[in-house]
Amino acid sequence: MLLALFLTFLLAGPLVAEVEQSVPLEVKKCCDIGSIMRATPSHAAQCMPDNETSQWAPVFSSEDGLRNNIHPRGGFNVQAPSLPLCNSTRVWPIFHYADSPDRLVLLESGWLRHYIDKDPGERHYDYEPRLFCMEKYIGETGLEAQMAVVCTPKIEVETEVRTMILYMLNPIFHGINMILLLITSIIYFILPQLRDLLGNFITSLSISLIVVYAADLVRLYRGFSEHVSFLAADIILHIGLLSTFFWLNSMGYYIWKTFRSRNVFLRVTDKRKYCYYSFYVWGCTLSMAAIALFCHFVLDLSNTDIPISQRKLGFLGLSMFFLPIAFIILVNVFFYVTTAQAIARMTTYGRIQNKMKYNFNMFILLFAILTITWLCKLMSQLEYDTLLYIDVFAMLAQGVLVFTVCVCQPRVMYLLRKHFGSPSCIFPCCRPPSEPASNFDVTWGEEMMSMHPM
Image (cartoon, rainbow, N blue to C red; front, side, top):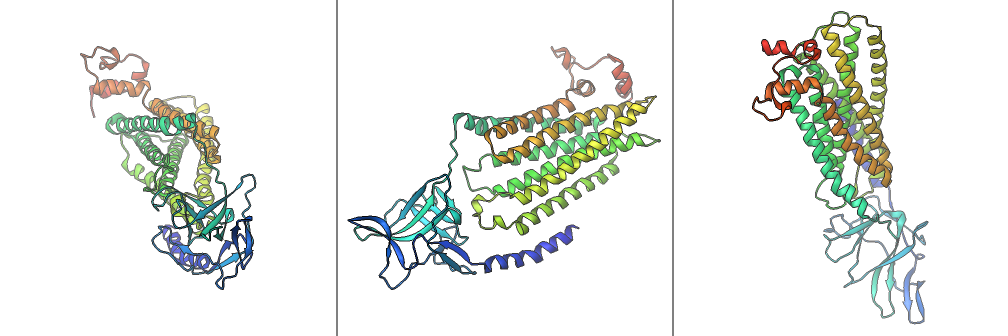
């Protein structure tokens, strides 16, 4: 399947690119053909007939600003007169002449780039084709300039609250969650009693969440630097999120299958089963990611005109990442309902059934935590401040709650005290257990492991 998608991508990519390049660019001219913008001592700037023999024509440049007089492969058409449709924003003229601080560059993609300073590496803003028109301008003194009439950009006002939450608290929250998830994965990896199939699921799930937090940490500073591919950060984040839900789905399927089986037995480690589930998780994750990237780069033509520095995962690509997760949530709901019914019909409990019931309760909690956080992430795509703040605190709660559910529980704390506790510790909670303190220890048999280490 992956090979077929890869071959399709290779074959369809050049065809789509050829079609895009053959479509002429539309450049809006502020005045009629044969007219330019001129200012006289008695009149303000207005469109007047041009007596020169050469007509005004747009000049295209490369995105890096190093190559000028580029001829688009598909050519271009000049629409005149065609003022920008600004709706609620006002119209703003920009003049580019020899010593002006403003610099206008018409990119080969059809976008207009406005450099605020003379240095091309300084700050700039890009206008899409429908938000500007261009024209030649001659002032009262005969000064010639390149002129553009643009719609005033909607610049987000970074309030103190927004700045503090998004760019100060959010990175701190991400760091805390990454540390907690790393501790969780290490605990379930080094303790032999926890290194069973369910423990391997939790370790893999925690690592996937760490990747999600790391990629989201890069995306936080989208507006401060262009030295990082934010599109790559978007892709890595959603691949990590997709793999997280596939690991959760594997956990739910394993518990559901165990309660449906008549002959149930557990092993301390089951490497072969873990390999099978790993093939399932990463095979499905990479397949869904390949389909999403195919839709983004080949089918979603709305992103081809956006400059590279401002590109991010489009609506079609995001949809192909979010839809599989929604389907996984529905499947997990099925696992929850049917497993709960199977447990309700049970009349006798052995040690294995008791362990699986405990794992089922942990699965329910993890499923609820990840689903609620995913819904907050989905709603934050609307980019309202309130929804962004909810997503920030939901991401914080996710890592803390996953750590609480997986680590801060009696059995894990008992094992940590047994393996890493010190008899000389001043705190009783850090001392190793001397004897079973409750029926919990007898039920799980951890005291037997202490007597007969494996």
